[in-house]
Amino acid sequence: MFDFLYQFNPVVAERTDGLIEERAELLVLQPLLGVERQGIPGRLLILTEVSLLISYQLAGLDIRILRVLHQKQQFPPAD
Image (cartoon, rainbow, N blue to C red):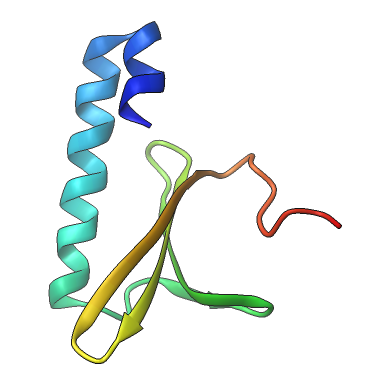
């Protein structure tokens, strides 16, 4: 995500990267912060400020970040 945004605007890339990191760190304190969606494994943390989703799974005490998606990207992919 950072590399893609950096091509267009380095300042936006830095801010977006920082926001993703900040919100991902919140999951340590609040692992159920994201929403569950039928048909999608794990949870989705919605970052409305930048139209992104963080897809993650809980595995015991571990939090596994699976993907960071733009909200306009179709997920899961259409068949």
